[in-house]
Image 1: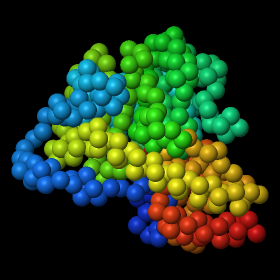
Image 2: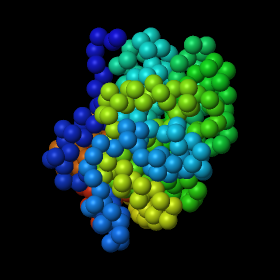
Image 3: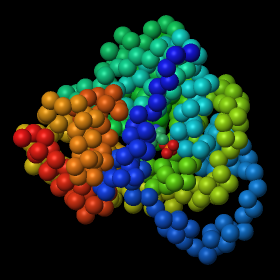
Length: 377
Ligand SMILES: Cc1ncc(COP(=O)(O)O)c(C=O)c1O
């Protein structure tokens, strides 16, 4: 095991500076729904009020597992492969703890959400980051990935749609990554938490689930469904490892909360699911135009590869300053909180959660402009 513990820097940052920020563009679970938007009939309200607060089934109710299987596979056949967890955060933790042993070779990509990267480090793995390149639209370099993956590679961790870059892996890229993993028998951990947040299509992004016998896909209601406070996520894995994952999950949390499962059943019911996804994509599409226009007005200073999905813009700044310094200055001078590129393994970028209310976004961006002007003077 490693001598030093790698903390989750992004969350530490948000926890430390969030309470004193007046303009928060750091939280990727933006514009959450209200309970009343979900529980909007007398029947569903009464059902909830009458439900017993007993221990729920550890892996989730049968109905919810079927709805989640539907989300990944288009049918409920794989409901027994689903484990409902406390957010995707628990799902990622359980998978890493189960699959990764000290000394294992694990491949991740940067920029990326650093949970699996950090958790694998903390298991004592040798973690190799394959950089994604903005010049290639943040798309993975499949040849570079093939060079890094070697016999004995234990796992390849991917995030699609990507946080913070917003790229969606294509069917061809997914197939190529599966072939690379298959060559050496590596597991694929696919974090698909941002599925459903597509900007340019109403088609949900492709999943890795079902394409290979060593894939675990992870999902959650925190993003496209607008329910981060519910702390409701899941993993879907092949029967070869679900029993072990279940054992880890039982140690960690026993189960997700019963009322959260009941609300998740409502959210994933086909008609409600469509309504929630339309809602989220609608405001992303509106706010992206605003965000893009703002970046364009700083063309000497800022540039961005437009995301294909997510509420996130990973903006390059052309200043010779570390990203944490720029982000600290934004917070200290203007009360604006954004993610620093360093938190995603890629310097000279800031991550803006642009999918906010237009007026809030405008106010935060105006403040950001002032500070960037000061820093570049
Ligand atoms: C890629 C990714 N994975 C996992 C998580 C954690 O999600 P949850 O709120 O479901 O725990 C996040 C949250 O930002 C994320 O962006």
